[in-house]
Image (tube, rainbow, N blue to C red; front, side, top):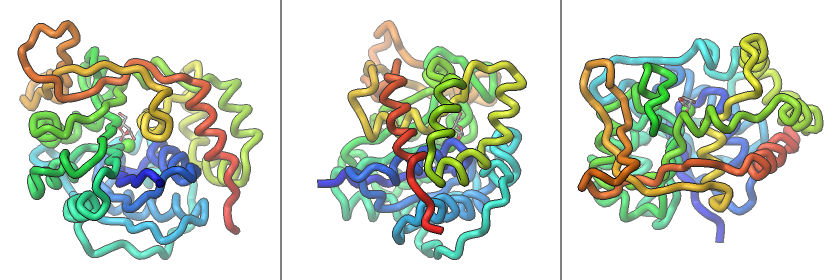
Length: 312
Ligand code: RIB
Ligand code: CA
């Protein structure tokens, strides 16, 4: 019985790698990919997802267009990291795959009803997920589990001093997700920073890659890798692949449950994911926080994805 995945993404370069990891796993079936504004504009995200599917010659996986804007916050993008187009400005050919007319939020609800027990993987701002929860309050009960890349459980932000991008970009949506019982497993920014893929291993896995790794991943990440090396980073940071590793190989992760609250104020704390690590608050635990991921098992998932060959 394959695990059904609903993947919500703001398809930048790390989202693309996470998608490749899922596409390489015979034990999972992606039943839908929903697009949300985040790393880049929604238009770019909707262009990027089919390009990733084309890179591996994937079957007709439904793709859905979602929220153009956050619930309340102004638009906020990260093209400085992902390139103007979101895929490293590598110039990949546009795809001819069709995009569904159904809105992403409605698609998440329908797919959760059609595939009870499906896993929701959210790799971008939580706008579509929050809208889906407003449409179908029983969404958490329909889903098997939810895994998000998001949050900063010790307030090590990457977008503000205290906030991680996916939460900061739509703090209201994140607050809804945590307060209304999605009970996600969250792979946050500190986990990302503490789990780099060190250059020798990264270089080896891309050197031994198939055409997907060599002709898609390497050019897509060329600029990010160059900048990371120039800044003397010890390796490449892979936030969304870490979240996808939790989905594909749950035993690779260590975690604890906690009560998480999101700061939706407009001050310096906006987007903070306050985690009650000492259990002092009386609030119910509403999330599972990932504290560590086995790097060898993450590498195995990446290597499997990169060894795929393009259809052309
Ligand atoms: O903060 C990192 C997260 O924000 C990743 O999901 C990245 O793709 C961006 O969406
Ligand atoms: Ca993302």
